[in-house]
Image 1 (tube, rainbow, N blue to C red):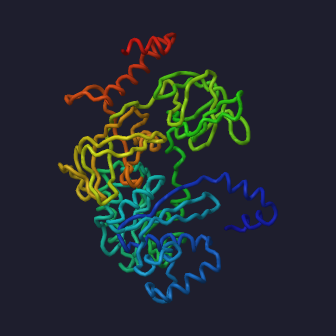
Image 2: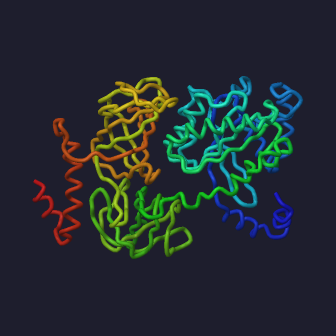
Image 3: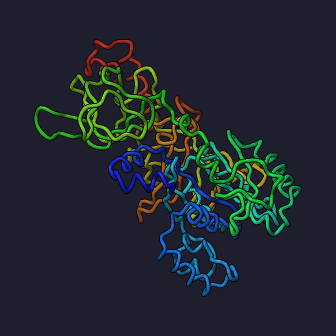
Length: 476
């Protein structure tokens, strides 16, 4: 913390808290191959930004002597790796979250495992992040997990990547080593849809170019890791065009009030906006937006609000309120990229519970279009997806659900696959497109219900004076 911050805490704690509340929040993860230094990097960020309490540092210093992994130096990785098994082996097993802040931003860090068998943990940690720090050991360059984690980061819609080329001290801080790795990664990344990539040569153990600029690499004139984390522009990442409000709860405290509670996942919502309730297709206007502090004149993505409507419209948990002119897909069938997370492989026509946004359904995976080799990005024909494998699959649900393509909206385009017996999440999916209409296969009830919903919405749009009975009679 700066002198000005310390002074503000001492003189006006409320002003300090208000200043802290208004800081922008960046969620990021560290990933890469095992032993690349992910936990050490986070420990160094916390240490050099003065975010470690004295008793924590003392405890880590004592444990460093026991582990003996860093010689006479403090093993800062122990600040993150808290499990006994992690400390014994010197590896990260589970996703660990840490929080810190600077004068510019607040940060939530997800430290993810490097081992291949824990790839599912990496995907979990990446699901809410805006930025990924990909660590590469300068001694070995690009590894399998480097490619795997980069591909998953791209798949999960992370737009910003910092490639941290670590352990430069073990390569005599060679500029040529840095340039060779940067060139190799850039060539691989051309096939990934990553918009913003930065490269930093560093030594997390010694602190070179993490928070403080390194005197050992005068040839590097770019930003340090901390400077990048503080200044990378993330404000434009959110989708502010398509209003998406998944209803989580219907608030009915008395006979004079009915509101629909949830978190606005995309777009700007204002009183007077013309909206459609999906999947029913009923239309109305926003009457008011209510929060704990009273009514507001607009809501932005991430805000928890209660929406009231001008008309008496049947809205239930799992429905979605959207702008009338910017509507998502409504279908019971879609294609999606799936990361499989359990030992039992994913096979066609097995029943699962599937949660899309706040909508719960049952359904099956009908076919695997292809499995993706994360090293070469080649498409392979397979009949099942094994643990940690990624593939493009088609799903059919027992009822229509509301969704967007994941690239358009990470919240409404994501889903999880749940085992019906154990209730454990066994797969994560990112929807790529909806499937509409009749295929060459036999028409099933799920196909028909999706078609009916689409037709229902179309009729309501062009014949707003028709009531529910008129539409029902037409669809018979």
